[in-house]
Image (cartoon, rainbow, N blue to C red; front, side, top):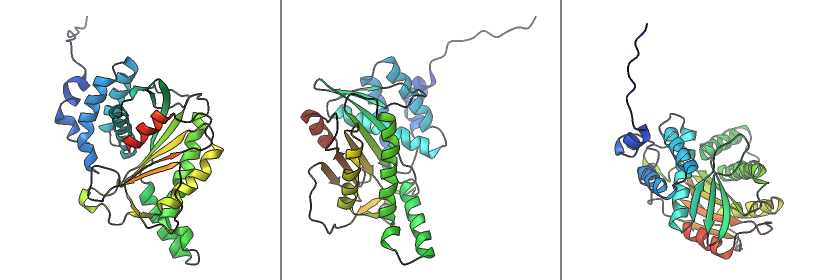
Length: 281
């Protein structure tokens, strides 16, 4: 008869290893914001005490330690935004993952409930630059249409349309948060060199035109890392747009963070929610 060794009790690996600095130290080195992944995880682990949130946080740590750069950046985006929401006074709960597409976060702020879907467009800026170069080599007649900023704008608008489809069943305000990280450069000092030139007013105008056709979407939060804002030729200022630009030397923050509200939303954010979102930027 075979003999089986006695099982010994063990603690979860995320309790003994991940909370400490050993694994976090080996995470992404694409931007210095990764240095705060451990602190953000610990903050969320304290604040989000329900079982579903704890399970989701466990999975996020697994993804951060994986080799798929896209999965890593998506997990970082969730940790970052959830932490920012807590800092502005919101109560955050991570929603369980399921085959039926749903939002990532359920938030409560001053008796208002809203949901947040988070997505990371990994490599979008790099692909825009590469495609622009190919188009220019093929034809130099339409240079404006093949600019990287214009291609990046089209990619983000396409992602908004795609993600909006999975959020159509919510009866409360829903925000879509999009992060466009820079994953090509390993050195933070290289940020700003070769970044995508983006006309912010033209971009927010295109997004503002799209949103009224997506009435179930309350607004879009964007964090753009590898862009360089260019002076706009337009003097028009949109009332539904809030933009915060930071110096390229502030490595721990996105170059541009913005909130674009849907002026025709069926369920718009309340005034307290909009104030919190502006503070979050």
